[in-house]
Length: 463
Image (cartoon, rainbow, N blue to C red):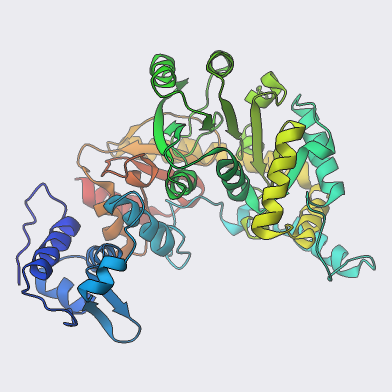
């Protein structure tokens, strides 16, 4: 059929894709021909099952293969292939979506150091249970109809008060509740971004947001991150060159780097937004994990140019999917209408569930305990990674994330496939890059790095 070269600089998955593509195009594989099963091909060529899964899925996306349930993979008829939509953003875009759907969000793997959520026993589960019992007992719990378009009013009022604690002045009508922060960012993106628009994003950046923007056809422009925040010279140069309409950024405990922007960087960013007339969307989902009282872009700007997004998913429970955004009134109304068009209202039941947990007298004690626990985990995991020869992008000493690379690892995606076979979920760096190119960097969630099996695996791959 064709051979693979494990010594080549071309990743094995691309060798498999190119090998099959040539066989189909030169007629060696005819339309309707059945392909070897994933395990058969992996065994015959001495490669990972995950590499073959990735390659076959890419070939499906490109229109060369078709998958038939319970039967396997077959060569697609060329007439059907011509009608098959291309994968948005090309080859690596499909790889990113496949990885997030099948690996990145796969809770079945035993160890999850690459995931983006806290372990269940780190969350406010008892508070959720108490709120659920109270909600079930309440006579006014409405299980029929829909909730308010902007979300449950008492929770919006509570968000207003939480914003005030962080020196952001807003009223409840400037708050829109959403299905987590991802829906909030998606609503803003769909309102402000058109295909081909230049959109400024953190580089590396928040994986879910980057995928959403690619789907909308945005032209992504990177604002390079540094351990102190932003590369301000590069930021201004790219703003001048591309004139973006909007900048999606995560100043505090950023994913994936864990870095936090200095206050001087926030002021400079707002000056650039004013000078070059663009909107700043501040993703502040880790605010409750930050032990330091520090200003946000929203507090410095008071929602003039800043749209502020946060969520309770990271600390109460990711399962209840309650987030929110705050914005100036006219924009908030437009986003509220878009929310109704795309999905009607959010769930009042889960919003009331979150509201009850937030009113629980143990909530603030829980968040304090969580911050302390993460600080200990940060120190321990950073020390272990450094001892194994990793380089850390930053040492935040707070939050859940560390961004690390190792000189022996050229492509973290290949390592992630090997890790998955050992029941370990890693967060390879290409997911967080603008072009989805192979990267040596990896994101580590310190709360999920408690098992020595992880470090034993990393040691076996880096010695």
